Image (tube, rainbow, N blue to C red):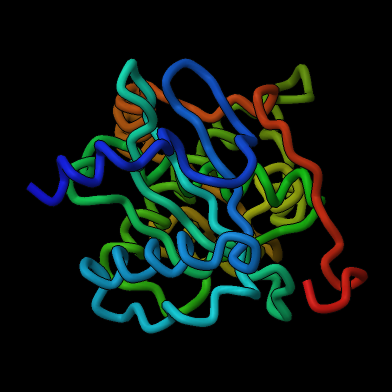
Length: 242
């Protein structure tokens, strides 16, 4: 078959580019759309099979691609990827994101999203995916935003011995998570967790929300370990034509 002939000729066992993350069986590779044009274009064409709104597949020069793989004795198997612009005027940290159908509903989508925000933390800025999001994309991102924000809020300790509720600002949540301010507020409003009371905004966490959060976090067996990321942010504005 065509696949067997290809495997007999192909000597590549992992994506091109730099391996910037590796822990257990999960790896991430950073691929420059200009240096590895053919691979990047084929990746976009593959994504076009599963994303109705996918339009870019030819001009890959302005983009970086982050490919997530699982590796075993046979090599590295592509799970999914996300792309981002080298220079984004809107500070988007994701342009396109895809988990291949055979790996969907296994938590890999959240890992891709989590990794994109870990890169934003290293860059020292907040990020957000390109809008508008697809229906499935919005569900995945809202799930990640909810779990990440609640993880911060649940972890807060009361700083007063008299049991005074802890205080945190939206900006502080953004700094801790690298999630953009609009996404934080829209997530809190969507779950009806933020209220205006006596001249100030308060966040209330009902027991059912905490129970659902605990169950959701228990399902996330795999998390990104920031200590395993080997990546330095680049200032592409100083590099001319990328």
